[in-house]
Image 1 (cartoon, rainbow, N blue to C red):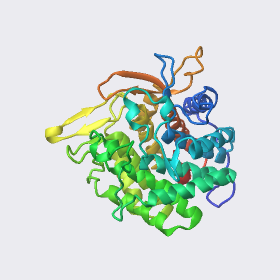
Image 2: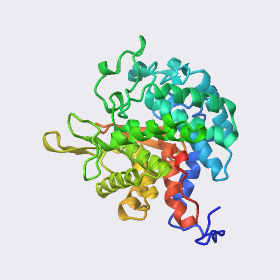
Image 3: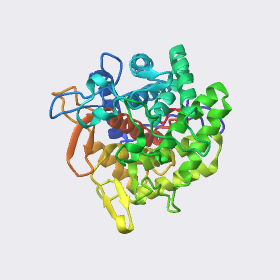
Image 4: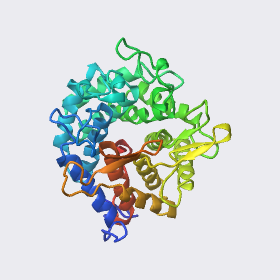
Length: 397
């Protein structure tokens, strides 16, 4: 319950007409996640529904972790309707894709398609961090012993891979996955600031168990990200080009807010705020933040919409109480414009679309993680006007 300045119950606020469209859109996205069959019969979440081919690609461990955290957050808000789905998701994570204690195959190999097939057997450390956060959140919400046991194993596995300086290899070399050093130089296949997001799960585990090593690793991951932040607030995600991809930039900012909140580290919170303000200042008239930003010899700004990043910046704006700015209002409008409105097809209706590729190719897929990010961002941006409590750092999807 929200409280007033004296600690008593706050007076309920009427839902503003300005935020009602956002709340309805978030409710539709949550309904899609529950009822559209985007969660497979196995319990794992499919990455998206391809509206062109009418097919679902692979079941995806990382994004299944996001959904487990989302279910715990919704339950904390009084909506427990997603917890049974999360139970099935946890069972799938702890069984089908848990290749070894604490480590998860990226994709369910039987459903991997096209250019993603090479990722199937990689045991991504980033994915394990996302899943760890969900497991701890699910245990707290339901008392699940399976979630707790799996979280403990995941924490132990991750701690073997976090270096003392906070750097983290994308995945350990295995005969089937190969070495990360041999993969194409995409941000997600290189150590980088996005790995700070792993710190949220480690911080949550440390709180649950009192594990000092997990807490120290969480802080080290965030401090490593700080070394790649420019004075303007921008995180460099490609050290060769000095460029920034907004998606991992936002992951780092999210982690610094969460771990800064968990540990009382004001410098981490301040760095997150600077990263947020940099992204907001770069939002264009159409409500799109820069998908990619580079200067100098590598200069150029790419703005083809990547809707998960649009949602991430709006969510960060809400976390730092700058969600009523003109830039944030444009972000909200852009986000709402990418919700699928197709009542004739429940496989897509209410979901949020991915947007476009880096090259500008339209990708109107009904996307599971974009929908989760968007639902949380829209509700958080609306909550201030409705008198709802702020986000618990443990539930940042």
